[in-house]
View 1 (tube, rainbow, N blue to C red):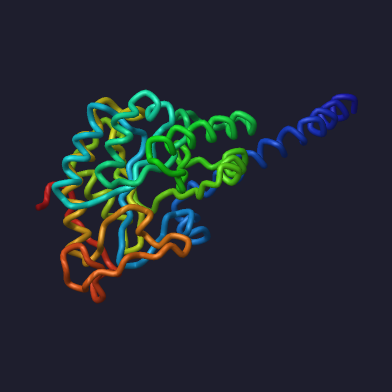
View 2 (tube, helix red, strand yellow; view 1 turned 180 degrees about the vertical axis):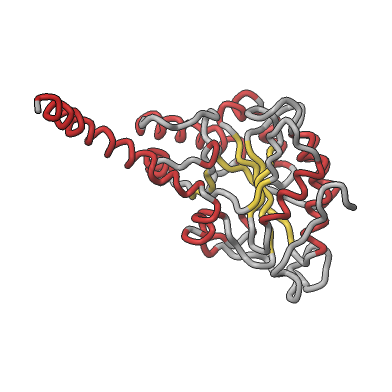
Length: 275
């Protein structure tokens, strides 16, 4: 009887701790792709049906990021780069070069940490610090926020709102952070989930990934853009994507990269190893 009473008191004492933990991490359920697409399309980055948003995380990196910029220049494509505050502060010239070449800067946090323990004061402080650094490089206040690992706990939701940022995750990714990623695997993995209106997540650095894994994303990039265009989908940054009522520029149907009508609803890409 005494043992049952002690166990009951322990459970009663632990209940508030469990409730706080659940309230903190509960919103991170939006990381689940199916739930996100069905219930929170804006958070998933769902935009205009004739457009695909191209986004990159974790930079800027003075070695790898310029190589992505050169490929994007050759493709005639602009993208949104979710940069880490610490990397933008460490490599401000690369961050400014992103903007000079017409790309959109967004906030990926200050560091690439896992937010398992509640720390709302730190979340708010570090996000505001990242906003300041990114804003200085961009020449204007950033609009978009994607937390590391796509984990939006309650503290980071509140910090984003306080900083005036709009959280946006993704609908398709290339799993390009893996040590076994190849250009073919990245292309096929993106294609498996990408449809018109989707947002693609890639990485322009191995800052939080397997060493040199960014080379797989770089190699896949031309084919991913070509696949989108062949499906009648324009490719560009989130600012042109129509998320949350933002207007998507209209292009002439049938032009290269222009939103199509008959084919924009579907997207197919060959399996790895196929041309």
